[in-house]
Image 1 (tube, one colour):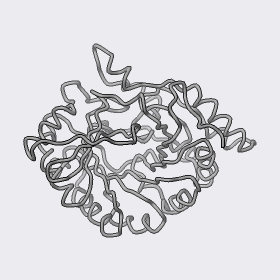
Image 2 (cartoon, rainbow, N blue to C red; image 1 turned 120 degrees about the horizontal axis):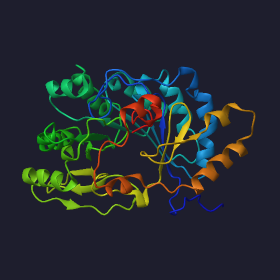
Image 3 (cartoon, rainbow, N blue to C red; image 1 turned 60 degrees about the vertical axis):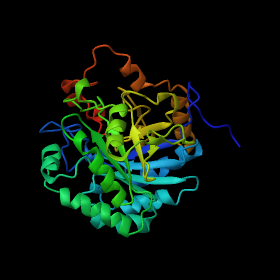
Image 4 (cartoon, rainbow, N blue to C red; image 1 turned 180 degrees about the vertical axis):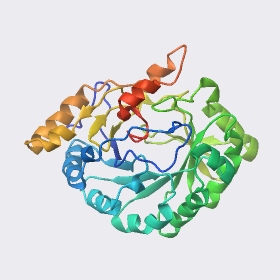
Length: 343
């Protein structure tokens, strides 16, 4: 057996976030605050056949966890076809999907039947009015219906992702925790990040892990940190006195770059080694040019061995911190957007 492929810090290439579209049907203020966006040309998007050729090369090099993302991945036509193809790959131990949940009620059964293992739903509020303000959408009820339906069709290990923003939804932390328990879901509270299109981000808007835990404890009592064997997991997990488990993703105050094993593939085949990375590796050209699978493996191997990214740690060292990308740069290169590179 070949030794595992590692980068310059000894981090394996274990987890891949696979974006299937840059489009989204919501306009969440922390991700897509602008009124207009520049989209990737449809002709540039990887076909399912191209993805089906590329993913085994990642698996050959040690990738065993794949998460399908967007934009909103359920906007991609015939997504269960791709799910079935990925689920059949030997070596894929975990196949998950992150969705905003609007179309989940209608798609959950098909995704389950296709072989999807797990689902994460983004849910930032329990208030329809607040949801409308955050996302510029009236579809809050559909999101809640999708969460319920996912449980009904047999998805266990359901997760909820909540981006916590001071003065916006930080007062809902106890209520969201209770709702997650009712849905048999594990909620993860995420510190508001200054990445990609987060043009409204300010340091003052960040609610730290310490503050999040304080709000939880004021509601349910002391929490116990869990010892997770998966050091590369983005969330630190805790248990309440009642036994409920929840997580906190503290990318802003406690970056986990040291153990990060994730990379991101955009829908047009650009491979990023870090959410903060300004540039990526063009895999689409290699896929569409005459060449062998061995040549694709060499491109992946060479790039990963040079990987030295630790974007969140470097950002934390800045004295005067502002959004990581300027508006004019986002307009020039849509791949810098968080919704394009799979957030």
